[in-house]
Image (cartoon, rainbow, N blue to C red; front, side, top):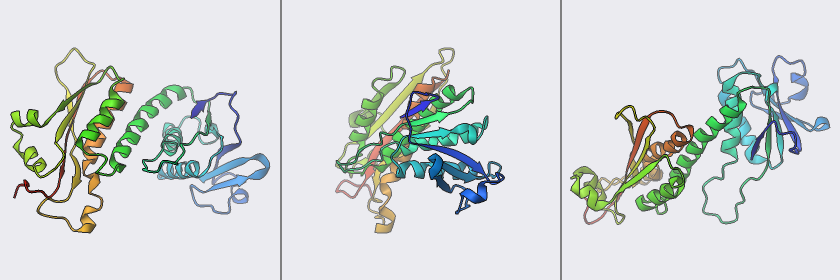
Length: 289
């Protein structure tokens, strides 16, 4: 859980940034690689090494902080002002890393406990609250997409994908969800989609998520994402090395559908629709050839 400038929160250590130009840099860091983190026991402070002018600073800092949080389980105060007073990219990197690192990874294990540590962001940046809310919406969308991608294809099949999104989006009153079942798809004469699905034991679905917040126009932006929940190649069978990651063939659908969560939270004055044709492509007696 993240708190912002909440002095009532207790923490066990502090994280600060220390740039290469600081005279203490060589004394504190043994590993002077950008992104390295060193601990000073006398002050219970972790220092992250780097140089803000480096073009890769954002990515380096983000990756290092994310890994650090995933590996540790204590309440942490992050002194954002030691990193920057007004660099939105750097402040965003810190918040994004915490939001991603504290999100529970998809797993089939039943004994995995979610992270419960508190992270206190200490900053004088005046727009921190609005920035945090925007990033929370964005990273929640990203994490949802990753969860859908990481699910095994015997778990994230078309009907399961639809159920997950329907349950997730049902409380969001500014989103409209529609699902086209097999009979609906046949009536629309979507032959190409049907030809891929006809070899599958799972009925194909087309998931539609709509957001309307601009009544002054009938125009809308449409996003369509490929939703092949597993692609064996059909009768043009892929070799094992080419099939191992084919559960990710639905990444387009996961991305566009998950993005609608962020749209619903940020509430821009636009009209948007996301469509996800969902099926797998397997070998079966009904496969097209």
